[in-house]
Image (tube, rainbow, N blue to C red; front, side, top):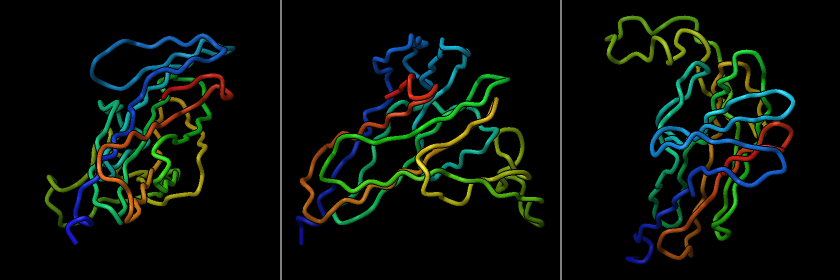
Length: 193
C-alpha cells in the first residue's frame, strides 16, 4: 500500500560533549570529527564521527568528517550506519562503550566491528578497485565480523567502529526521528554524544 512506501528519516543526533564529573575539552570545529580530550589521570584525545555502512573503517583509518548522519529508510525495513572513533594518543589504550538513546519506537542494535587478517591483495584486479595503502589496511587487518559487544579496547593510534542497525517497524510514524549515539570512555567519566 502507499502508506508502506512512505520514507521515514532517522537522523542520529550527531556528536556533542555531554556534561560529566571530569573536565572535558573539545576542539571547536564546524566540520570534521569531534575531538574530546580527557584530563583525568592520563590525557588522551579521541576523535568521534559517524559514517556510512558502505565505507569500511580499518585500524589505521584516519578520522572521518561527519558529526551527524541522515539515514532514510522505508517502514518495515532495516538500515545501518557506523559510530566510529580513533584513539589519537600514541601511548595509551582506551576502553569505549557505545549506547543509543531516542527514537523509542525503533528496534536498534549495536555491534562491535571485528577484524580479520587479509594476507594478500586480490590478484588480477585493477589497482583502482583495491582498498590498499595507508588508511585502508589491506593487506593487513580488515573489518568483517560483527560481534555482539558494545564495548571495545582501542590501542594507541588505532580506529574502531560500532555497527548500528535500525529495525523500522511497519507501523512506525513517518517523519524525522532523532537517535543519539553516546560514546563513553575513561572509565565512563568522559562522554561524547
